[in-house]
Length: 114
Image (spheres, rainbow, N blue to C red):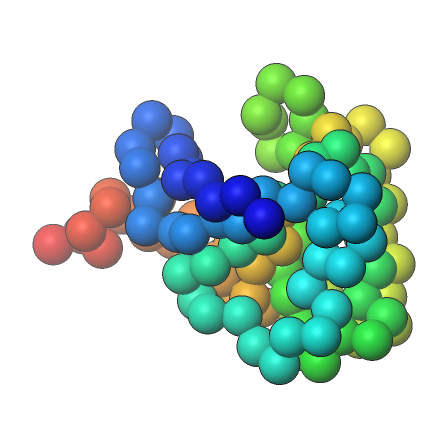
């Protein structure tokens, strides 16, 4: 699996992103993991639907279109759920509540307002 850096609103975020761009990687996703670090995420592309069947922990899911624009954010998605966003080109999966923390940091600045 490849790794990448996440750029959010022009600034480099401190998130390690694993890129799942092959079918076998996308099918596995986060299954089998017991947790996901707060500074890690999984980028699935192409992807317009995800499920949490068999997941051991809740996640945040961000659906993104082909231009990189956020289409929808689903927070704290528990086990045995299915999410679909027909217009999405990719999905970003993060630890539960990570999307909210990232959004609040961008609103106050990258250093938390300090």
